Amino acid sequence: MTSPQLLPWDQWLDAAKENPQLAEVRLRLIAYARELATQPLLQRVYRLEDVGRVGRTWLDGRHRNGPPEVWETFALAMADCSMGGGLLEELPTIAAAARLTDDAGLRQRAVDQLREVATWSPLQRPGWTLFARDSKPFTDPKGDGNWLATGTGVIAIVQSLQILGKERVPADLWAQLAALLELEITSCLDDWETKRPWFYRFDNPFTNQWVLPTVGYLLASAFLGRETHRASYELGVKHLQRSLDAYGSEGSQVEGLGYATLTLTTLLHAARWLAVAGDDRLLSHPFLKNFPTWLVHHQQPGGFSINAFDQGGPPQFEIINGRRRSDISMLMGLCAQSGHRDARWATHCALTSAHGTFGSLVAKSALPPPEGYEPPRWAYYDATRRVNWRSSWDEATASGGWVRGCHPNDQHAHADHGHVNFIHRGRAILIEAGACVYHSPVGITHFWSAFGHNVLTLGELTPDTVDAATLKKNPRGFPKPTGEVPITVHRLDADGGQVMVEPGSSYQGALASWTRRVKWDVDQLEVDDEIVPAQPEFLNLRWHLGTREEPQVIGADRNWKISWPVAYLEIQASEPVEIRIERMSDHTLFGAKPDDQWRYPTHACVLVRTTTPVARAKVSLRAVGKV
Image (cartoon, rainbow, N blue to C red):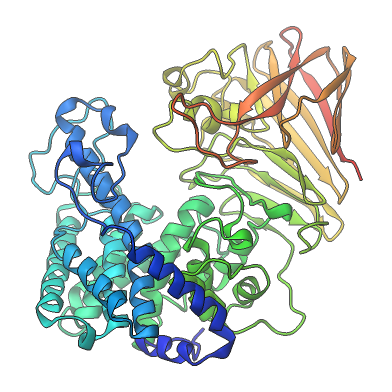
């Protein structure tokens, strides 16, 4: 998996500076860096009242969940986490522009930011676990240990120092930052010895929280010298290998696209750095040979993405339209630099050059794919229990869809077992609600629970009459977000697919069985549900529609038709059902932030509800896109 592009960042940038094919993205990077340089420095704050008001910090709304005596500790820790991400977004871009232009102003801005960062010790202050009602102040000053900012902060520091080189960084500052990195290594090793963080105590290498601190002390060790820091270096390699081994060889990441972007970007930074120095133990791992295909497969027609799991932020796949500045482009670029064909295809055929970060330069510098190459268009991923499919790679005319089960190793998953999505020729027909920020009071009730997905609930609870505390208890008739829900694939090919999901085991004994059969082609999708509750119950099936408009409802008893300008649904049931149109909170179609009252934009949702408690029911749905 080695590539001639795997040079140290300073040498790689010097080569990119002379590449005429990168002229446009270089100019955009430089323009963006100049824009960033007009902003105040990213600064650490030390008081609760300053978080969100000073230094471009962010205040996590969950800080008031716990008792008042931990509010400040939690808020400062989460501000560090956000600051680490911002630093990784901005500092390497400014440093790269400074090297590309020899601009003294940009170089000084990078140095000024590094001087500020040199005072951030530790890079991640403790307190990030203190958002529960029963949280208590720490007796150990190191609290819950190092966390996400450890990884993002170290990457930003060492990458920027390598880009700038010693000749552009004052010697005293270089020494200060080296001392900071030494302290980070020592602190992380102490976390491992004491099992201070929860992910070490519970031995959970799947989580991003295991990976990012590991990347931090591994890269710090590699930067300061592999031979002089061999113990921490080898432990870091071992721990990242454990994460990759846990993910498996098929390439699908158990936390979904949003957290995979965070986790694998940082891990690939480490893998690349090590490979440049001749150690390819991470970059050659089988998981990374297949991960880029899984990543590309999140791209659905019409600019949408497969937004299962906690995929926060705009739901569209960012490599289509650059809604975010750098996250997907850097990740895809790192994959492409390792030579993967599907990642190379994405950087040249799907990744816009309209944004200008260091990540976009990395992505656009990748070698092109073989002439005429396209990635595969369908797959079943067992490790994330998802079938995905699209009819072509033409965004405007392609149809696409995905079906979810549940794997016992799922993390950051929703109660979406059996969920079905369908896009007809670039227009969303069946969607899910999406994912919102964790401190939203409607997160559990309208997004993460079964209410936010095209699945089944039993009984009479509705998203607008139940509170989050009730749903947290996983009441009877609602699925748990974890479990074992297999998908059986009967057919998956260029013409469509046919699969079966059996989510009944997730419903805590409320269902004797639930079998969902799904069949689709380019123009329509059919779903046949056979549901047997453990005792007679009201059955509720929801179908979230890709429209804001109020659909027309025609029918009665067992036969219904729901129509709107781009599609219609036909519903047939073995028992009498009623149809209601709900307005459901949306973070899939529009990606908008909520207002001060936590109201999100809404889409139409069809509720199919039996008119009486039933002992068994068959319900069929046919979704047809209008040409």
